[in-house]
Image (cartoon, rainbow, N blue to C red; front, side, top):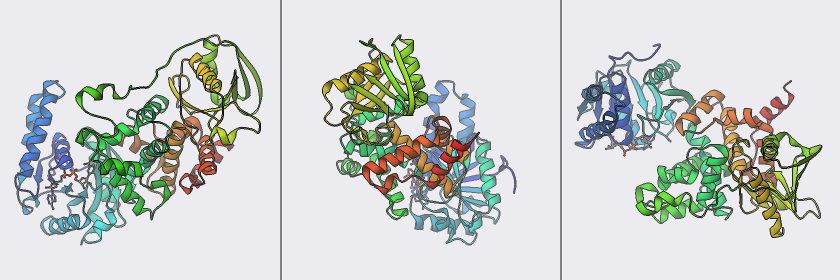
Length: 510
Ligand code: NAI
């Protein structure tokens, strides 16, 4: 078995719900004959009709020719019985997410399919090894994990259980690529790649709101503006559904024996209990009533205002991490008095001394007697960022925040003062994403490149976690995590040994 499955290979798809009908469309669009089956009478027919309806706007916008849309539908046959799938070379199941149901189905399939047929599961949370344990030919079973909506999202995680034949995984990888997808190999472990590595994106956002650091719309704004995410975590949770998102977190937490990194959020639990599930229920962290939705993002949030400074800015310490910020000030003719020195850069203006967060709150980082320490957030690109969080040490006079705001405004940045929370917003989120990716690498779940590809194409992240370690350096993330541990005393923020090794390796590179 080498290369992708030939086009004449018949693909069986079982379960004609959200995922199954999308997968059937993908296989048919790639030219395969498809047989779609569902246990519920009429469901397969309804699934095919739904996908046909979904193609109509694409035809109307000339994204696909009308005859091609007709050909896709024409290649999808419906079967009300399982034995009719006997000519299939690959059967992908997308039925209910229950271990016993999937095992039962595959046992029935083993009885009707030839020995050469490949069995694939679209499960997002069940161990491929566990499903295979009930089968006579577990070597023929592989995870083929599509993302929703399957015709749109590029990523397919090809998940190998302990018994999966590497040739089977290689064939499914090649087949997914031939279908226009971005496949990655992953080892069967809880959450595979994306659902595991993405957990901190939701978890840290929820914790920030839970602790009163910032409201959801501001957290979303800071992460989209500061790190380039297309959608903030609260918008994304509303889209996924708070119930589904909370369930995935719970499953991951249990699978890792209660590891604090995956601890479910009480706040999200409240939203689920209240029925605020997100878009599908009309209300989640945002309100989706037609008249309120449009402005919800911007409600109450200031935007960048340029203003000149009353005097110059003194810069001490090593400016390497804030170079672009200094360039922006210089470009607006702000006099910079650069004094150099060891240690991280500090920008002093009026009563404020601004430093990039190292994970500790300003209050815990301030030197004895210091009264104006301000910590500001990490940004993917200080040359372009327009919204940035900052926090002042407890007890600072109001003019400290006013001077920090003025300094950032002089660089064309809207400073958003949030509570003096450890690691602020972007710094703590990126550090935790990078850390999770490092731990996934350490556990041999996938390679660096595969993890980066998975996060970019499975969740539309602007960069993969390892791209961030290349861009900003692994050291800063390890330092932020150490700062978070010192502030919270919570095992959740422990740095992965893989992150420390990466940091050492980068620092000792010539
Ligand atoms: P769904 O509820 O929309 O559809 C499931 C379909 O399977 C239903 O039509 C149901 O009648 C049918 N079904 C149930 N038991 C069956 C059986 N024994 N034999 C034949 N058909 C049966 O579910 P959805 O969302 O499409 O999920 C399906 C699978 O895909 C699950 O394993 C889920 O975890 C996984 N998945 C879901 C994603 C999502 O975003 N919805 C993303 C990636 C994976």
